Length: 477
Image (cartoon, rainbow, N blue to C red; front, side):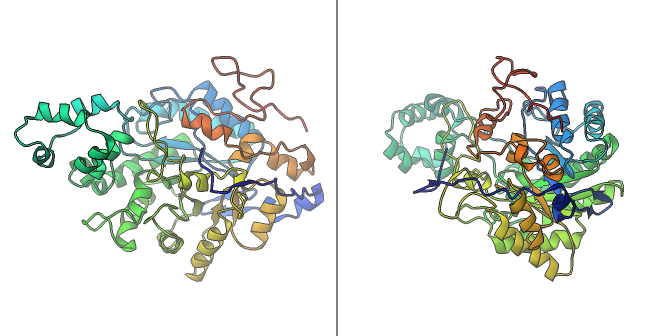
């Protein structure tokens, strides 16, 4: 796990828990409208992938139990994990790319409604992602995966391709850096990864033709399943975020300038909006900053936010970092994980942090982006997240106008009832996240995600090895 140089451990901020009367008067627990829907309060559980779906992407009883447990805490909004829009194998990640997934998703909606007493609005986050391969064993890479080019032949005159593969496999690291291209070295060291700028590949070149329809069809399906809203996943290391990134240098009108980079995200949204029922709230999650060299900046994101608001999005949810460009080298046989480097730490900062600290690290950027949206004449609500775990923190952000809703993923995982406890004046009973990223470590290994603060407690459904609980213990007010 990466930490900033010279990191020090930061104590949790003072919670400032309110009395029940103070909570009733707080902005945190006041209603807010997202286009066609209204939330009872400004509390938001962002999408988290718990690795509980089947290998085919279907809802399971463990998925239902996971979301029911969050719903029992009655947040204003609960966002279902990144759900794949393509009907292709993608492991134990939920999918919504075909009508056969509808029965399970309908049951998920019903489960959350019942568990929250109808108080929580349920949104689904929909995602597209490009291919990434596991880091290969070097011998296999040179024997099977590397495409021999004229550049390689120039280094080994007179040798046939088979002999060149053998010669490459025997070269020391320093020589490989001279003979292989940067992309070939990356494929060897990290595993091959497609980019949106790989327009020499037909399926990458055609993404602007294909994605608006795929996202639109998925949003229609989400409406049929009964969801209250759809969050377009334009963040982190995935397809749509990569179009927005300043690293996108496509030369076909979808890369380069900010205006070109926002073009496909806007086309996707317009297709979704045109196809979706008017009762569905539509917005996106995107990055306030890429947090990698050459990536998008806060100024880029403020521009994107205004364009999204102008297009009619009902909410804007902000994250940061979480990119492949600075990911750590994975072990042989494993895939790179975009939350292992500095940008990943910015996305999910731990208690071991630089002088700035990990708490509310995205708030200043959120305030700038929200101010740009307001200055352009739009009132689009902005959701901020990242190390927010106390009432004092959350209420201060809202009172100062730095955001309109408070997203809390890890704190809500630690205690799914923390919003409810706070609202009832029972803040002293909140189980507070310690920001060690134990949960993120499980996610990295594609293991069922739990929290170290409760997963060893007795009782409850457990992981197949019997060692960890699958949901937090219940709370009886």
